[in-house]
Image 1 (tube, rainbow, N blue to C red):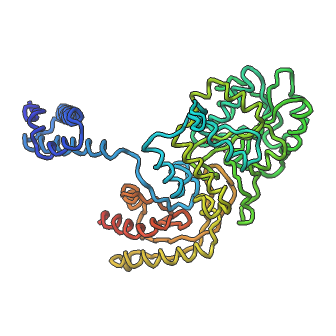
Image 2 (cartoon, rainbow, N blue to C red; image 1 turned 90 degrees about the vertical axis):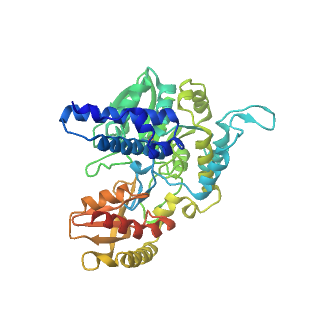
Image 3 (cartoon, rainbow, N blue to C red; image 1 turned 120 degrees about the vertical axis):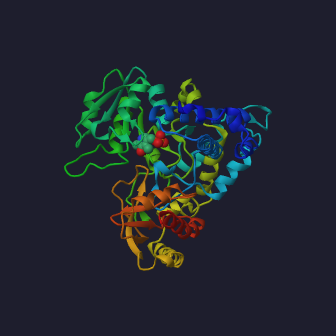
Length: 466
Ligand SMILES: *Cc1c(COP(=O)(O)O)cnc(C)c1O
């Protein structure tokens, strides 16, 4: 029986490497890790019948238990350098925050704050009052409410205004956003009944008019933020939906998704409706994300008529969707970048989107030079050069927009798969674009201090392959 060479828990616990783990991990977790790894080895021996000497078995259990504990200590969220050129990458945490925003969050995180206290009166206050005046000033709305994310915002609006009643939406706008946000499903969760009108490519205001009944609670417009229907199409203009809503006394709600506060067309992006424009056109409620084009932390923002926002504040569902002090701090500071003026220079997401191609070319030239210096040992095997490329907005915004940018192409002469895996598992991880036989580093999404790290990371990954 090969199991006789398995060490005892106590024997493993005496090992110096395990003892040093006890200095940085709770003892019960160290004991558990050793037990678990002994169990793994026991199962393996029974399954495979392989022979292990006592020495080998102890080494293996020690090494695996230490690895298990190290990974527990390090946690799993790691810094990633985004070299994909996709500015709002949902898998990479969407909007990076400005240093001012990060500092504001950090300064409030370590102590108490007036989250729900009116310091003037010394009485209980509401957490929702903090962001209200900033948002009202920036959007021109009568009232605002911030919840956990935009999916929560849509859910709260529908549940408050349309539970057990009907909501009319164009068939061309029944969107799915990555990560399982689907309008029909959110609608079902909220208790509202979806009434689809029109066809995939064409919907007219008369379709809405015909669908209205005594059960209708509201008219919903959803911004088709991550796709476009092109060709033989017709969408109902917001102004027509607003006048129909007025005439029939039905609220008009727009789920704007990205919710930009700045017209980015001077920087060559397509014109998209801003939150302010929707409010000005008379939309009763607009919902949008805090961490897409706005450039803040994850949040969902609802702006519009005070009467409707007040109804949502009375809904008990809000308790489950509420934001914490860190989100409020982050959003307050991110919106500060708009209050200060010229947000395109202060909000990182907007800065990346509006970067001048000539500056990107200069950045790429510098980085290319630094990479060539660092990778001298691979001369003749790698070809490193500056290229023009197209970047993306991402985050389900501006689906067709291509942002002219620059990057560094490193032609490898071998399949990039393994190198890319190495780059992903470094710290910080580096995520490039992949092309046949090459990797590409887009410079648009690199922060200044990250630029300096890229050459060294590339060298470490290449060395690890040898
Ligand atoms: C992104 C998006 C959502 C979901 O927003 P989250 O903040 O990710 O919850 C909903 N609707 C539209 C139109 C979107 O673009």
